[in-house]
Amino acid sequence: MTSTEAHKNSNLRTARQAKNDEFYTQWADIEREMNAYLDYDADVFRGKTVLCPCDDPEWSNFAKFFALHFTDFGLAKLISTSFAPDSNPGLESYQPSLFEIESPQFDEVKTHTKGKVFTLLPEDISGDGRIDIEDLRWQYLQGDGDFRSPEVTALRDEADIIVTNPPFSLFREFLNWLVDGDKLFSIIGSSNAVTYKEVFPLIRSNQLWKGATANSTDMVFGVPKGADVNPTDKVKAERLGYPSDGKYDYTRLGNSCWFTNIEHGRRHEPLQLMDTADNIKFSKHKEVRGVGYQKYDNFNAIEVPYTDAIPSDHSGLMGVPVTFLDKYNPDQFEIIGTSDGSFAAELGVKPLGPDYVGNVGRTKLGLASTHKAVFKRIVIRHRAGAQK
Ligand SMILES: C[S@@+](CC[C@H](N)C(=O)[O-])C[C@H]1O[C@@H](n2cnc3c(N)ncnc32)[C@H](O)[C@@H]1O
Image (cartoon, rainbow, N blue to C red; front, side, top):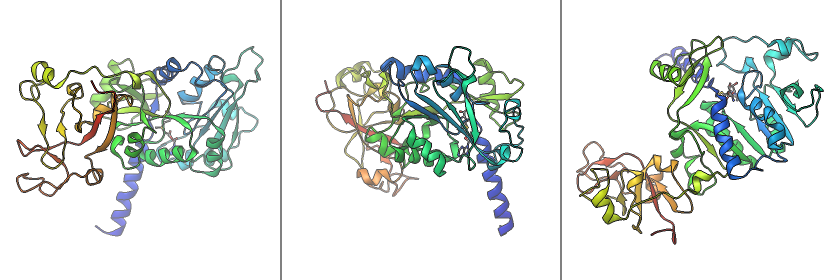
């Protein structure tokens, strides 16, 4: 490949990735997740400053949602920032809204090159007797609204809680930015992120966990009209009540979920489990019923192929599917590691021997009885005192 071709390919890749970043979150998904935090602590947002970066209340639901609930949640301040259209390769066309054009601070150049900051305080600017989106003030930022910029980072530092759906392609960077800020947050990402090297250590140390919803609930997103989405997911979104409209097409993303460090009740619900003997007798899974638990060849743990087949009385290490994290209760279990990527060696998983055709030398977990490598596992054990 010539260097011009390589450059062209890399430009195409960037454009495609940027387009994949334009996924707009639906109100019902935001509401469901925020309600779970409120069910756990009715005052979770009281007196707090909430920041919604990577957002724009003219087209996004996050700031709209918090503006509507400003008073009943008891918010002290809502800040939302948007990203400049000229800096966003994912936007194919851009037209400033009537709201912006009619504002005295409208600027024909800045509308393309600068980000915006929207602020809501407990001040009834519109004089309609309530605090809502009508009381939002806005101005252009100095820069393009990149979340990594000093001015948006200063807003992060001012905030108590950060809630958004960040660009998918910058998920790792966005999470690092949140963790550096040491704030409460709730963000949307892909379930695949759980074993990323930036993410898994946070999950293992209980500094980050899956949100309360969307683990078995399909999330639907608005996408720019004509965006390249999987036709099956588009049909699924339609079936879920989101047919294309004048503004957006819709798609369902099966593996989207929330990542948060805000407490919710689901993570304190204990998994109801049977002991080893009962699993062998009654498990609904043929891999366990009448068979028991297999051992790994290259790591001292048992293989538990389904989360609901975790034996309640096993005191050693257990390899469980990654979807265990949807049910993970830190009072009940301890996460030790994962067999995925470089974490496997850290965990002490030995490279597979010559019997593992196609996987020789790899640090996947291998089943002693069949000499088959298993898909990535999370390694857990019952928390001392929590085991039956
Ligand atoms: C996945 S979309 C979600 C939009 C909105 N938060 C929502 O959920 O409906 C991510 C948004 O991040 C914005 N964005 C992309 N790169 C960004 C960056 N470096 N800094 C800030 N925002 C960015 C884009 O404008 C894009 O619309």
